[in-house]
Length: 292
Length: 271
Image (cartoon, rainbow over all chains, first blue to last red; front, top):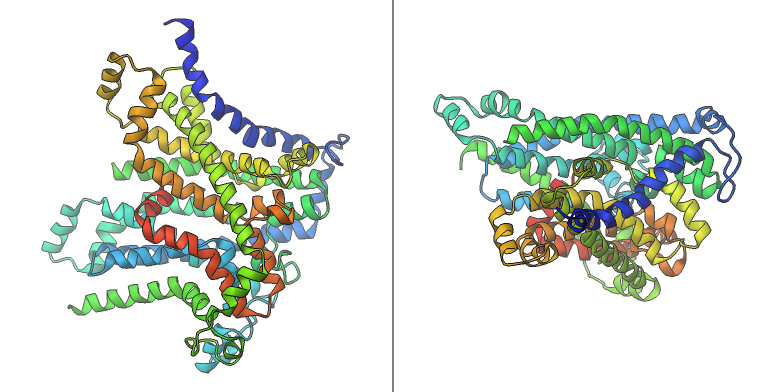
């Protein structure tokens, strides 16, 4: 092979390498550097671990972390809802394709849009409370958005509502790849619907459930900004009741102009997501192996 | 119909209803007068009015927000597809040192949350004057959507039969000709999937938009919405008319291309 043709592959991948180096490589190096510096403007003096100390001694940081962790409670609900709906769709009763199109709508709508709509639906004098009062369930007619005890749970309802749509579609794709002969055989042996689901379908779903759970952990720890930004009025409100780590970083960078602090928090979030990449890849491999 | 089927239909109807509630609520409320909404939050509009739609389109910069979002989507998606096609072709079809690590690194970048990259890019952009420019934001968006595109296209290109390449090469075709004349036409489904998923990602993003496009003239639809909804906090029907307009493009695309949406979003679940 001559020199020219040995260079050709590198010409093809060069734009990719440049683009990724700029959007991922440069920032990932710089956040580590910034996190040890007192950055004013573009640069600043090294200050050791001071940024980390500052972040880790701030109540609002820990509160944000706690909220992200609390939101993880949404995942079991998401898995159960997705399993139920996908297994029912898999029975392919009349009209299942139409149901499938409809239940995926939440995942197509932009998060800011549905957050705005949900905020109006859950307003204190909005439709949800109107229905609850009409059902004489006044004690349930909470101040969903305005009360600091409830607001985070309302955000969680919204997350469950939207992210379950992804679970349904992922699980259904797995189900449609199952070996039908096994299920038919079980039917002939007289296994009822529940027995078929419990002993034949669910065991084969483990891989995809694991994959979806890991993806959801990453989403909830590091990609709920749009939900809380709209629901919490841009500030994680009321008070700090819907603050999350992403919003903490946003505030440090944009509102108080402290890139060093924002970087220290970013580094910690990055390390958590790196720790999750390995289970993610393992889960994806296993899910793919199941299907093959 | 068996009794079991009735129960299944019942559960699925309920799930469908829940999935559609916000869409139904926003459409129905947008058509109500303020007076009707004040006393009747749940019913259908008795005398449908279109005033709120007119008000949104005339009195707020919705259309220019949408245009901005469209420019970003077009720029980022085109840039990313060109970069990804070239790289995926090399990764799938050529031998070179570092090929497997390049693919592994690219794939793992899919799991890095965008917020992590924001701080240094913001500091850099502030210094070199790229804040509130289309090209600055397009570059970031293109970077964020490219790892998934490379991953998907590499997988797809590998399925193109080897004989096609060999016979083309016999005819004297170079790599670039093979890529544009043979591989890309065969990859239409993968390209449409990418087009759909990546457009949706850029169109729906809020985080990058509010940080990197702060200028009023450059504001995107999602960033605009967050301001719009605060300003008209108490005018629910007006706000809902805005949301109907904002969600219409993606809902229409979804209904027309739902196969590609479902396939693509499943594959892109990592994001």
